[in-house]
Amino acid sequence: MKWQGRRKSSNVKKGGSGKGGMAISGGGAIVLLIIYLLFGKLPADIGPVDPAPAEESQPSQNQEVFIDPKDQEGQVIYEQYANERDLEDFLSVVLADTETYWGEIFSQYGRTYKEPSLYLYSDTTNTGCGMASSNVGPFYCPSDEGIYIDLSFYKDLKANYGAEGDFALAYVLAHEVGHHVQKQLGVLDQVYDLQGQMSEEDFNKYLVRLELQADYLAGVFAHYTQENGYLEEGDFQEAMNAAAGVGDDRIQEKAWGRVIPDKFTHGTSQQRMTWFNRGYEYGDLDHGDTFSGEI
Image (cartoon, rainbow, N blue to C red; front, top):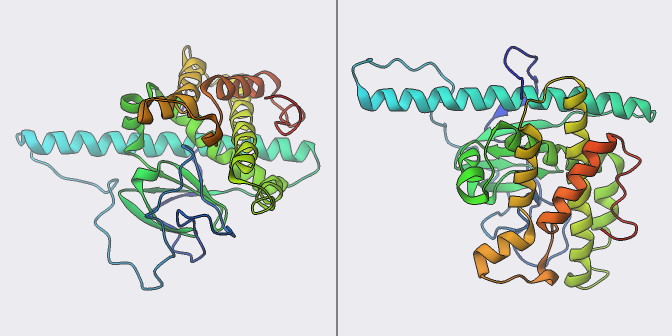
């Protein structure tokens, strides 16, 4: 993706929001504020926010670091910092693009788009939905309208999900922004109002449709990126590989050695690729109804 030298978002922050709220605790309790995870798992280690102020954090990884060029170990550290600064800049440009595109799309429908915040953190962070750790993967917290990403996830995409390249990461961010769009449109509330009114198995079917719609919305982002001439050769396939890599069937097969459709919460690899491709093809809100008919 062509991103160097382009506008960066002013909504990128380090660490967490620090806001309080109720979060998923891993049980089957009624959920008031939901963390929507890319991988369809609700981690048990996320609990209520600690009201006490957080301890002083270590220097952020984008701060200037002075290293003796003869210090080979230090040079490795410097390269790591430089790489993370590139990832931060890249995600900032991608977020800026989503702000532009969704602002334009919402305007076409007579609506105003409210921009989300992107929080980049390491290891653990305090969110509006509770304490989160990097092992949960990227997620969207509707309480503070924030998207949370640990930059180490970029390596996981390649190592664990067979997806490499910068646009694989752009797909991940665009998917989480898709959840924010769903919140703006009232879709999230409509779906989660159904929880408690049906079995977990039946509710999971609605979660799948919710996630596939977020994939469609990520495809809409890719459509506009292509229209503006920012996609490079191979970018679209990188996103498709990422969508396939996080399909429920592929994740379950790798984790459990078998596939259990009743436990699906995000859709199969094929479904995720199909809806991302559909969003890329149409580039609008009119063709993203995943709640009617077959998926």
